[in-house]
Image: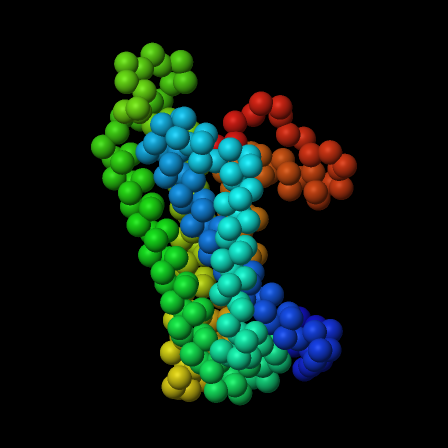
Length: 245
């Protein structure tokens, strides 16, 4: 916002390439985070408890997140090595990928665009797999139900949490897909008016505004956390042993 107001990089031109790289890094991390969430829900619902515990122990969960950051770094590196150029974009007045570099359009379409659509298709495929699995399973509506074959049942609570994660994914897609699609095309054929580019970019950023409300919509854990943050409490009022899945 400061850069848009003053019409120059708020932290100076020296830091602008770093901020541009971090901007794309944050996008990649968001994409892979959604993929990891979908994968987590899929294993939780479609596999045994032992399999889920083996794949998502605290240590392995840390390495899953670390892996997403490492892959995101690899996707940013080409832009730092000459396949594109990070810096001040005069048209959008932000630190991002510079359109003046001859290879920047190729970075946008071949690395940024393809990564986005590939991850999007993978996540959509995972949620479809979850849907068809749940559709063919019997939903247990009572926690104390004596199940003859527990593998055939999926708890209602887990399904509700998974639905909420899918809604978050849909909101991200609706907000981000137009910008990624239009930008990936426009970098090669400049046919869009600047107003359309600005609106699509604002729609993309709207996702970050919606996220807190989406998470707090049906998840008591997040509602308690947000209330504690607003009230400036030192300790978050989590209930020990409360289910989070």
